[in-house]
Image 1 (cartoon, helix red, strand yellow):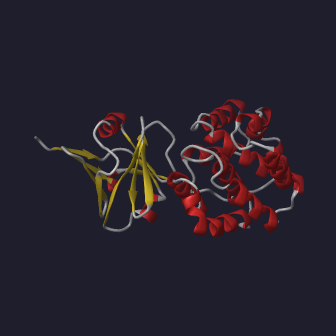
Image 2 (image 1 turned 45 degrees about the vertical axis):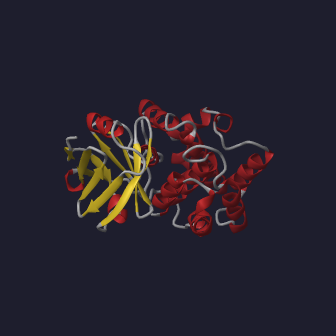
Image 3 (image 1 turned 90 degrees about the vertical axis):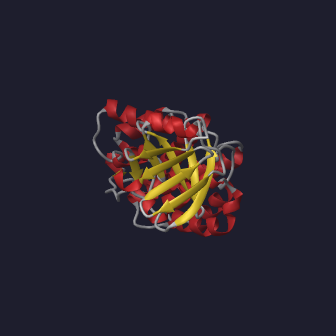
Length: 286
């Protein structure tokens, strides 16, 4: 049987990756899906997708033809080698070499934004978000308990440790899928806090809870939390948040919101609900 080599040196990568891919080590293919896959190296996931789709916070996007060849060949458990600036993926008859130093780095770190209540209220993005019944469309609210907690968040002053603790405990890992709806909702809350606040109430509470409850949710969700707690988000969320307090045309606002709504089964909607709730709290408390 012949052994085939494929070198991949064209694509994009998240600028969060140097934080997690910095040692010569081994790993394996974690999970394979219809149009993407994850590898795991020292408990850190790296997501591989196709160029043209939003880049994951811990992702690499490569040409579609290369990705399809990988997807047709790899299986969970295939061995991975990380060596300096190269990722090697070995299958039964292929060795794929991803040249990390050849990939274009994309800045997915959240920027601190200047908060102005009037700019937020008049934002075309916020107006579009408010036109959508996010509670109805998301998977977050399953009972009166979730509705009650959401209303508490909106009307509470930032820094309510009792409430943030209760919300993290209730929503963490709640739901189904690669990223449970409750986790996506928490992520939306933290994205707004990271973008607009000098405090880290939600982040501190999540960091503490995650340290002892990581096994209460999925590996994928944990890795999104880890990247978020370091200030990094996926590309579609970075684009939306960066424009949230800016004056953007309605057409652009619609594109940014739709990019979120189409993300995952309900993940985008669930995260958008968290963003909306956090923004309502900020404007309510001013």
